[in-house]
Length: 130
Ligand code: HEC
Image 1: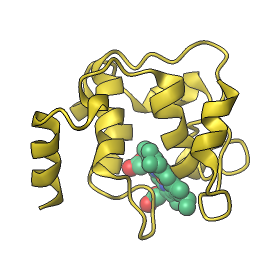
Image 2 (image 1 turned 90 degrees about the vertical axis):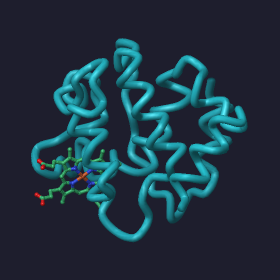
Image 3 (image 1 turned 90 degrees about the horizontal axis):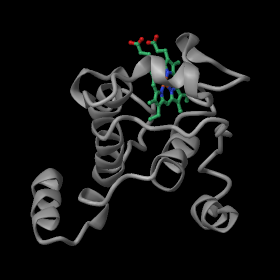
């Protein structure tokens, strides 16, 4: 049901992120920082996976092939992040588009894990910093 509604919204052009070129820092970094990096970063690299550094994170990605990419699939099936709060359809779509467009990650950009339960201001802070 949610997916169907999402598809309709996309067709209506109500979700500009669908067609726009994905910007890693603007569109993807916050998703990973808010949902993944606290368990896949320098302090806790669960399963040896780190998503805070380009070289490590891209080991879970096959550029231009989101459906073959562990990073995308594990979020899509709802296995990650663990717990009740999963990525939204829009967030999943941003990840998919990012990978489909080549999974560009500017050199030197490092991610910092955030705990969404205590910040609540992650998105505005992100916008300000740019
Ligand atoms: C609360 C901590 C936590 C968060 C948040 C989290 N992970 Fe994980 N992740 C784990 C643990 C623990 C494992 C190992 C699970 C296992 O072995 O069954 C894991 C395993 C993985 C794996 C390896 C799976 C495999 O089959 O080898 C990937 C890829 C992954 N996570 C990606 C992500 C992504 C992407 C996000 C954010 C959307 C995320 N994780 C968020 C704790 C977390």
